[in-house]
Amino acid sequence: MDSYIGVKLIKATPCSAEKFAKLNAAKAAHQANKEYCESMHDYSQPDWENAHDWQKESVLDGVEGVLNGNTPEQSHESWLKHKKAHGWTFGEVKDPEKKEHPCMVPYNQLPEEQKKKDSIFINAVKEELKKHEHRMPNNLGYLVVYPDGYESWSPKDVFEKAYFRLNDESKITEDDLVRFMGKEEVKRIDTKTTLVSVKTLTGFVEHQVSSCVDPKNYDEEIGKRISLNRIKDKLYPCFGFLLQWAKNGLKE
Image 1: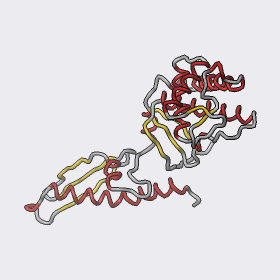
Image 2 (image 1 turned 90 degrees about the vertical axis):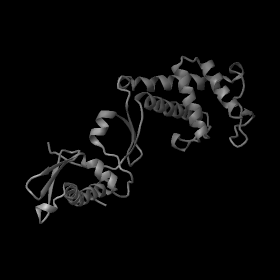
Image 3 (image 1 turned 180 degrees about the horizontal axis):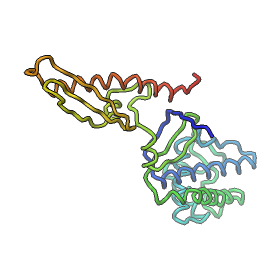
Image 4 (image 1 turned 30 degrees about the horizontal axis):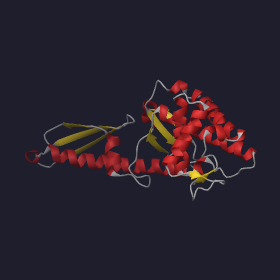
């Protein structure tokens, strides 16, 4: 089996395993509801990615209800309460612009096909949450979004060993470089020479020296500054090469 090396520029944000599980449960429930609506020739439900913020907020609120043990009736009442709080009222036809919805009635007044939505919602949430149970003990991590839009979750320690945060994905900043370089070690190796060694986050070590002409003029801070700048000058192109690879791959 051959070995491969590769890098990708990704987006990530701190996210607990619990929050990631709830987000995926919301997506699964939304998709289940969308498919059920379409089975009844209702094609008004958008994909999760295209859903309005109010739709996503409503679904996430429903997930919290399922976690609290809501029955289908309680799930509907929770949805009803959320809608009312955001200005929705009853209407014969669903109209997001007017904030009108035909299901803005008590659960016992819903048609049977609409009651079924609440059971479908609860089952979809529970099934999705089961997939994430193994992650719950390790609650610290990151929500990771890949270039193709695929989302995953990574434990904090695993993620931070593999990825390095950039201030700007279009360039390497000096702050990026300084954080990557880590702590320097400074030594005076003779009467007029300063040796600076930097061990980067990857374990790579770079050394540079700076000397004055007359030992009487020796200044460790000046020597340190000159050597560090030389190290930065050597590492900048390497970092730039890495970013170019991550953004465009091997075949631009």
